[in-house]
Length: 252
Ligand code: A2H
Image (cartoon, rainbow, N blue to C red; front, side, top):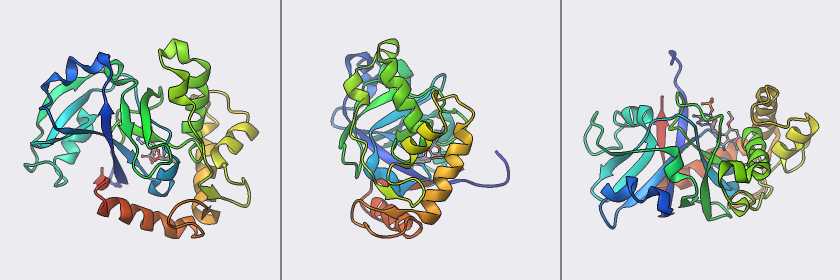
């Protein structure tokens, strides 16, 4: 954490259904409350293409009280930051109602705001860092090389991860068109650069290229702002998500 701040859009993915594995940990949540997995993103304009929600290994997660009937599932580290950003009931105070293990929440069914895949699953991603964002990452495999590489890996090793293939294999729809890579920029880069693992160092370059091409030369081809350059659509999509209450600003 240096002197520069990173401004994220925090996207709220509402829990629709916990699996049996989460029953014990979630027993302290008052009946009738809403719980959200809160994912930090730099690309709000891609939220149409969410296919799942990732959680990382060895991250201290908790469920934190926002108000009497609203709770966030985020990393402990980010909860302490959120407490100083006017989101929780009391400034600077963190009210953790329970710790959460990743294994408890794999397979949880959540709502992905704006996505064509409205109901998505929580899945493991080995490269999520505890030291960044909320420790929760929403997956957009059409536009994020990291997300696409992870989806491919999860499909191949579904049994190893103890997940169902149908939780991973969701519609990957084109959202952004670029002159250089067509309309599925991440799959196109991952294939052409021969990236075959979520830990491949070439992902760094793929990520930078996808971001540059998408932001400076991309056009949105899906949703309300279809036809607009990504550089314009980004703010517009974000504004809509803030107004609808599906996101808030989170900085660190
Ligand atoms: B982005 P920065 Cl479509 N560990 O959102 C690893 N990655 C994390 C993370 C963590 N703890 N927290 C957030 N991220 C991801 C969308 C997206 C993202 C697209 C394309 C590129 C992209 C959908 N996933 O990020 O290091 C989140 O994924 C490329 C870097 O803090 C978030 O935005 O700058 C981005 O990385 C934040 O990265």
